[in-house]
Length: 277
Image (tube, rainbow, N blue to C red; front, side):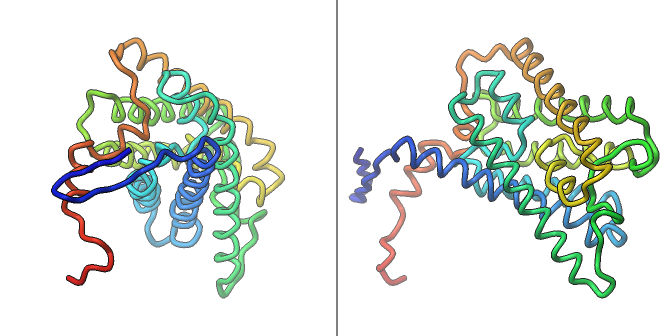
């Protein structure tokens, strides 16, 4: 395809299916890695200094940054529950779903491993098994001792808030360019509510990463932080399809790109890289 404006000619070619898929998976891996290092890292390395409020903002800011960094490539799901919700709502292609989930889990595991290595480098060292690595838990392992019922309900409801916001913020009728703000803020909100209850998961990949290094109790309780977020995501998709009834579906990645007119204007006013200022 050729785009010619103001004597600036740009050639672009659509990537092959395999290349496009790998770009998406790579973006999801990097984005989820960033989310875990930013959020879990804040909890483990700086939690005593910044408290629940600071950790909540660390998670929200990590997603906010990634929406604008990788959103136009993959839609910036960073979360199997979000991928599931987008799939059920018709805003995501089924053929990419498994690859997204695998990439998210790998990114979360690598991210948790990096946080653990950083923590071990401290003057007193760090043991994931005894100090928890910000893993999600209930009962004895809940920050405030909440039981399994409260933990499960909290994860369903808070994931519902998150996924419904993602669906609405990336709707064809939503204001362009503000999806990242809405998603980052709602993730901050759900952490403010959920950290005392479960350390806040709302994301099976985020839960999987630390749990693998903690082992024991974290792995035995992991099922709650897989099942409940997926149920919350499915509920959000059902509500979205009922309430919004979109006339035209648009993918999350499409919604997170600039308007065509804005992209064309950027291309039209750009200078070749070898042209001196």
